[in-house]
Amino acid sequence: MIPPESFSVSLSTFTLIALAEIGDKSQLVCITLAARHRHWPVLLGAAMAFLVLNALAVIFGAGVAAWVPEQVTAVIVALLFGAFGIHALRTQHDDESEEVVERPGHGIFFTTLLLILVAEFGDKTQIAVAGLAGSMAPLPVWIGATTALIMVSALGVWAGRTVLQRFPLLWLHRVSGGVFLLFALLAAWRALA
Image 1: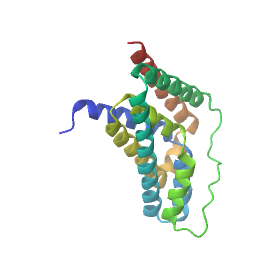
Image 2: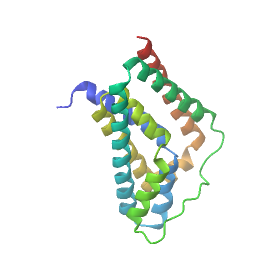
Image 3: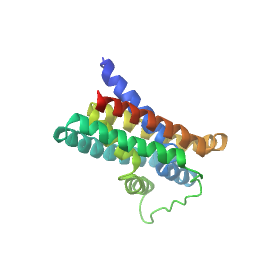
Image 4: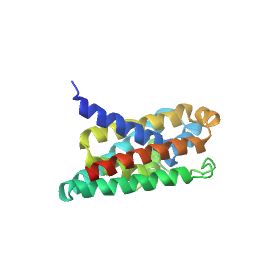
């Protein structure tokens, strides 16, 4: 049985990362490639990319947490999440027109894997995963973040266009920004406690 605190960490990580990733570059990559190619290689390439990216983020975040005092880590996480939240709330335009170019000479699995590895390395969600892993249990953070990113990729592959037609991308950015600000306040409270 999963301990309640691990489930809570995974669920909160899942929520934050899923909301932050909707309408982001990797989902647009999945939408574009799935429109022209078979769905499974696109989804599997995205899943493999996120398994690797989140493992790197969790290792980095947990490593930093081992060397930096918990209060300092909480302050850094609060500042990062606050910045991400403000950035998301200030987004004024839809990024739907971003063009994704397929890499010639690669299978679609490797094309998706490479595009997402390059697009997401150092992205706000990877930094958020590192920050969460520095202040919470790393394995539940990895599970929650990876599950969220794979689910959002699946939405991009199968239903992304429908969702983006019904809900303005701008509103999804607003919700994401609000969630990041909430997590920033929680991290700040933890730093002061």
